[in-house]
Length: 480
Image (cartoon, rainbow, N blue to C red; front, side, top):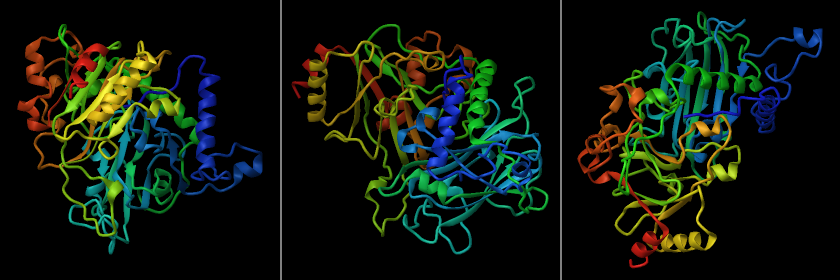
C-alpha cells in the first residue's frame, strides 16, 4: 500500500518533495540531466528540439509506497492518458532478469488499484528472449546467462497484437465515472537483491522505449517530468480514499491478550503488489493485526515455509518451487525518516529463528516507549531466545501519516507456490460475503475462529500473538 506526502501547504512542501525526488533520480543517473523529461523550456530552440523515444524509471523510496526497505527504490513511470502525444502509445521494455528474490511489473489506475490480472506480470511468467534463460523458473540456474527479456506495457483500450508476449496492460480511462482523469502508474519491484546487486542497477538494465501501438515503431516519449509523478500519486491517493473510504483498523477482540492476524478487504488499501481479485469483494494477500500501543507484542509464525535465501546464492544454485519465496514482518508506518522507517521491518533472509524453527518477532511499544533499561532487558532476553525485535515508532502526526492505523502490522508473502496450501491465501475473506465497510467493526469469537490465522486455516504455518506487560515478558522468558 502507499501513503504520500502531507497534503496541506502543498504549494511549498509538495513541490519541494517533487524536486527532491527528481533530483534523486538525476543523481542516480537514471534520468539524464539533458533529458526532454527533466529540462524546463529554455526558449524556442529548446522547445523545438526533437523528443527522444526513451522513457526513464523514477526511483521512488520505499516509504513513499509503504513497502519493504529491501524493495527500495521502486521504479515508477506514469502519466495521464489523453494528454498530447500519449494516445495510442505502448512501451517496449528490453531488460535483463534481475538478481533479486522477486521481480514484477504492476499497473495502477487513477485510484491506485489494479484493474485486473492482466495488469500484472510476475517474474516466473516472463518468457525470455530466444537463447536466454529465465532464472526465476524452477529448475533453471539462478545465475544463468544470458538472461534477457522483452515485455510490453500496452494501453488497455487497444487490442493486443496476436503473438505479442509478456504484455502488461495499463489503464486508459478512469476507474469509475467521476473519479478524475485517466491517471496511471506502472511500478517495477525488485525484492531483496543478492549481495552486490541493487534495484538501481536493475533499473539501469531495463530500457523503456515509447512505440506506436499501431506500428510498434518508436515515437516521442510522452511521459511527464518526474517531479509531476508525485502530484499524480498524491491525487490518486485522495481519489481512492474518496471512492472506497479510509484505511480501516484491523479488528481485535474486546478483551483478552490474544493477537489475531486476519486478511483485510483489498478495497480499503491501495498500491498492492499483486492483483487481489475484483473489488470490493477480494482481500489483501497480507496478514494484518492491531497491536496495543503501550504493551509488548510477541508475534509467532509457528513454522516457516521454505523460502529462497538469495544471500546464499552460488554459481551452481538452482531455482526451486519454494513454498513462499519471500516473507516479511512490518510495522505499518509512514515517515520520510529513512532510518526510522527501515527499523520497522524484517524478512525471511535477514531474520533469526528459534531452535524449534519458529519465526518470532517482538514489537516494543511506541506510545509510550519503554524506559531504556527495560528495552535493554527485553532485547537481551530476545537475543538469547533467537527472537527478532522491532521498536514501534512514535505515534504518527500529520494528515497523511495518521491515516495508517496505529499501531498495526502486516506480514507480506511474495511468490507463493500454487502447490502450497497454507499461505495467507488460505484465510477466508470477510468481504466476499460482507460489506467491506464494516470490516473494522467489533467482532466476536466466531469471527476470529473463522477468519484468523490458526491451525485449521494455515496448518502448522499459522501466525498468532500475545500482548504482554514488561513484567509478564520478563517473567516468562527469563525462565527459558
